Image (cartoon, rainbow, N blue to C red; front, side, top):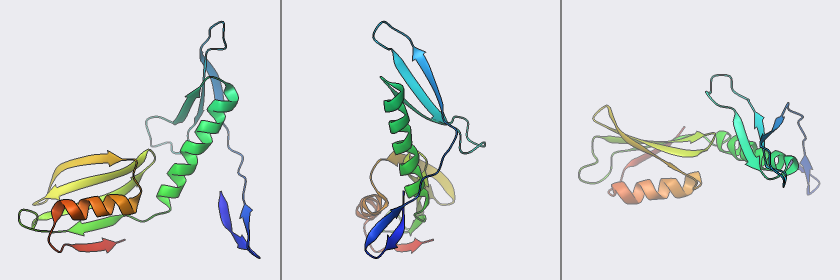
Length: 140
């Protein structure tokens, strides 16, 4: 995880976290391994990754946690209104541990949501294309 620059060179911070690695389906060829890390006790499931080796499972887990932390560092975006049919709508673009989610609210009620692996800027562009008109965009 990059923590900034010093004289043009990036500094890297390492954090040791307790990771559980378990063999989940043993077989003659090594089976599958799952690495898990529970960073948020309020979540129903910890961060997990499954791979053919314990090392690969740890590596995939690190990628999953890294992506989640990068998304959490970005603030939510609110899109208010839009073209015809969207004047009473609000779209919230929020970071989740597994990707980005867009919540659509129409006339004060949840109208739907969708999840995406796209980055926040791409999702904002998709919402703006969808609602049309000239909505207000607020970055919280």
